Image (cartoon, rainbow, N blue to C red; front, side):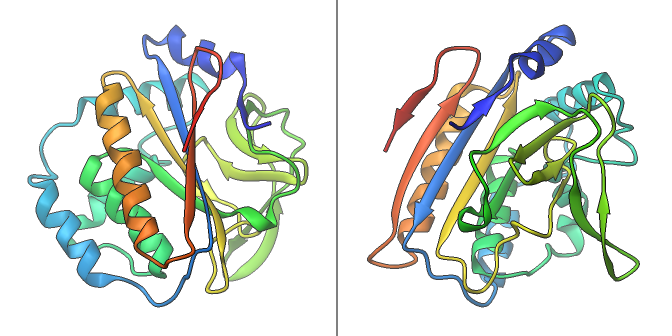
Length: 229
């Protein structure tokens, strides 16, 4: 079952932030070439991306709490905002779509190929033994997270390090992806309404990709699991 460990939520509360995680699951997708127009529209609609973002400071607090240096390992949203002025990366249709929604709603958002998972996604504090497959200097390598680092993982290993910093090579979205998992993360002061609006926007954009697309979402917070479609 998709789950967030209690000690991750406790870590966030320890630095004064409640955490909420939404998962959007979609199948019947059609991936393809990138969507540069969608990325440009998102940047334009988001307004002043150089303005202060209190929720980014909240993410820095949490990164420090599990031992990461936020100046060196920025969460996915902050990394995108820093690149927005010179142009966001163009990868493929699904990746460009979720990057656009992330920037527009200013919420960290990642997407992965659901068919490449082994077991259910879990957000945990790492033991340090979990494998993480990535690239370094152009070569595929296996790394391991730090002990206590917050990571997404499944039964085969880490799928994203430092909560929402870097995704694994194994589960990345590809041209032939038809089923995907999208994870939206929020810390106070991001409101529930703001997070729900991002989920709704993402779901709407996904269903426009083809007549066979089906999408559902699951909310995990400090409360018991709620599900919706």
